[in-house]
View (cartoon, rainbow, N blue to C red):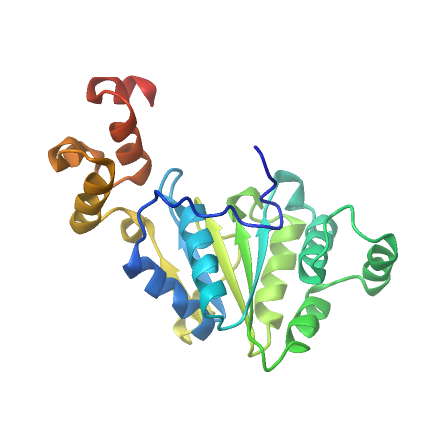
Length: 232
């Protein structure tokens, strides 16, 4: 991969379909403590998040902070250090003095929440992409749950995952604090499939068997229809 997406989201490709209905939904992240984006691979979660961040750069409503979760982030200390790095705008190989200060502060969830509150009145949203790499019951899952509980009024989290995030959201959801986007929301609508076909110069009927799955639509537009199943 040409560039790291650990602390910076991928730049949206100009040939990708923009999905206004989902971007409008994600703009609601500024009114909710947690936005949960759940769907299987190939549904365009990362692309959608990157487009939302790019849109916010054009007309900022707050600060977006990006974290691409990795498998070793299942350890709470590791995840805490990664969040501290992202919040400080550093890379993991950044200033050693800053890293020492983070170690001294511990960067527990309360410290992260305090750093977010320190930005007030500016809103801050922390994106966690691939949260399914944090197993339920892990120390990092506990840390993330504590962060959800500690976030101040100007703080927001986006959790993108292939399965339900490993944090309890039911109570917060009953209080209106959770915005949920599910797999059915992420599939291409009929109108979006039509738009995708037009952008690719395809007969829309060629996409009839994709089920609205963005990855399948991309494959169907790139390889022969009879080869799509074999390719998958």
